Amino acid sequence: MQPLAPIPQVVAAARGRLDFLRARNVDRVIVAIDRENSQECPGVRAAAIEHGFHRAGYQEVRAVVKNRKLENWLLSDPEMINTVSGFNVSNAVIRQVSSSGSDSFPDASRTLAGSSSRGYSKRRDAVRIAGVSRLDRIESASRSFRRLLRLIGDNRYAHQSQRCV
Image (cartoon, rainbow, N blue to C red; front, side, top):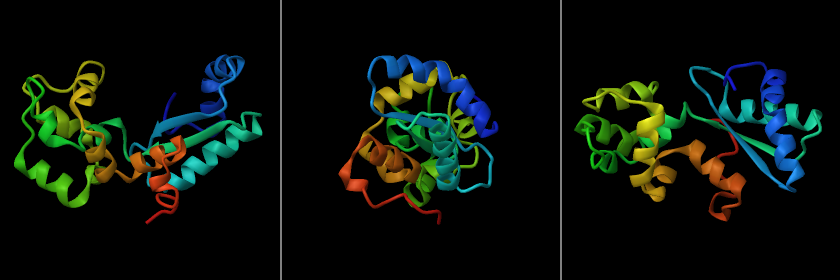
């Protein structure tokens, strides 16, 4: 599914999977989609996506728009990325994550690629990085990840990540 696609196209792309999940009595589905380079507030886009799914009859769907993409969440724990073979995140990146969070990187994929001797592969490296990342670091560094946790039902974030800043 293309993150910046029109909402009816996003709904159409997910319809088969949603029908599959509905047949198995799944009562909540969270669609996580990248913000990419859009300037639209992630919360506004998430609400519009949810509305599109609800209008199509999928009331069980909630949405989170990752700020900016999956790699921003992965970049949340740079010290642990450095334990992954082939990666060496710079002190400047570590400082930026510490002071501004991982959502502050406009192109986290490029940052990860520049931190690796082999470049960055979403398929290969995302799994390796996620496997060593600490959840508490990701949630402290990413507002959009805290929204995901809120939608999953984590009560610590029941009143957070609901407005644009």
